Image 1 (cartoon, one colour):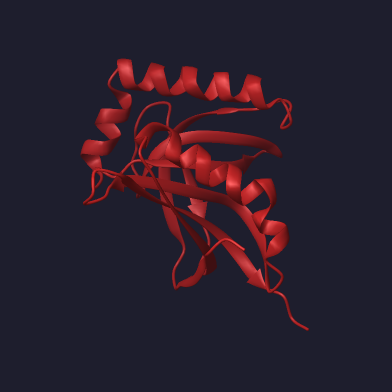
Image 2 (cartoon, one colour):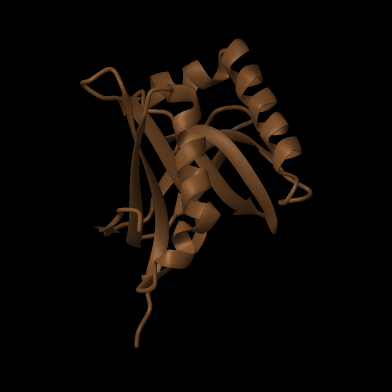
Length: 159
């Protein structure tokens, strides 16, 4: 079983992000292409840099449900008023924290996400993911590799 920990967040928090909605959640290739195109757009037009400058500089990849549709974006911790960005609310409670390491900064968030939704959640029997969203960050580690964590709000399953 993959390693994870439980961390409790005592207050609701917000994240501000740019992203795209998906019509078909199971269109993995199409959704990956839409996500990559959005990231390229906000990188090239400076919007992502503007958002990072307002916050602490840490970028997050965020999955959320907006108006009943799957949504993926890139953003920061905090509530900022930036044109075309959305502010997402994350609720207080217990969070599954799933760590990962890798050599490629750009693919590590996707690797952790794939591990979590590709079977790890089914292996965890004492907590269940309750959403409405999750976020993943990646930062440089000391050994030239990268370290990331995915945070998913979860509820303890009572016996």
